Length: 397
Image (tube, rainbow, N blue to C red; front, top):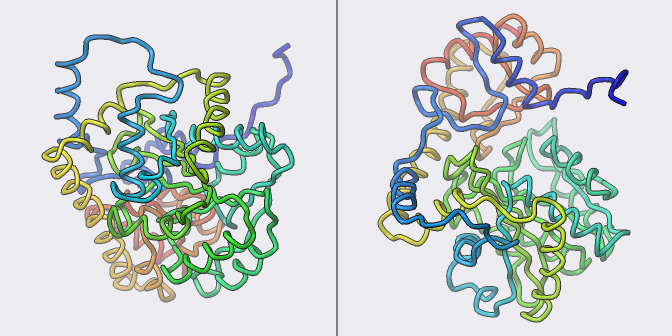
């Protein structure tokens, strides 16, 4: 049966990481996959995380299965983190949360849920979006459409075109928004623009689905939720796929969550029962360790305070690298104005480099970027900055 099968194309991001590992060049630089690096080029384990793990291992007495949706304590911690501890959604008990294997797992469960209950629903993605979004939702059987987002000439948001498209989306469809630190562009709507988008969503009555992978890495924990909270009006429904890979550094623990918000407590219980059937037919129940880490840190005031300091250090380093990148490009005589990069947020930046320029950077200088020109700013260091910017400046000539 397996003879003659053609190999599947490599993943556009993870495939680059494999190519980078095989590259013998000592000066190579990997700015493709979205993994945070410290000033020494390492992906650290946070001290708050290590303390939580030590406590968990001392107290652990069983390796029994979790429930289908994970632990209640984890779900409660996630909701408080997303919406704030005193939000109306929590007081009204109209949200339920499932612990999923990473944010990607949350997106797939959301896709299965939509396909199961609303077989004619389409999902709308920003143009561009994370390259794995179409694959996840297509595998779930959903029809995919796009709405305008990035203005390549202005290096900004195509807001008016975006709004006009959203006004045509009917009730019963789902629209995916990046809650903050848009991947791949790094461009987010302003608070005023988020408010207008939320008004359109309420009027059209399509279902907002938020991909929230970078909370705290843009402007701050609460600041990054401001756009999402515009949609969290009494009686409104939404889905949130969130992740702790980046802000806790728990990449290989695969700690994510899918939070369903319904109009009231009775409706959320009915709808969430179908989330659980989708999970049961997929991975049955989630892994425990990563979720226990997050729950321990978020529920312990001392550990949380330490984690917030570590998160701020990561955020400040990313923003510092973004500024240094622009300054060093200018110092190396790079053709063009790259100041727009300082207006972007999060781990990624849309550089404006063409696919041909990206390939030249990879083949001649060992600089690995995604073909779209997306750069992982978190992979830059002071040590590799000059070589990186000199290579880009040369390619631009």
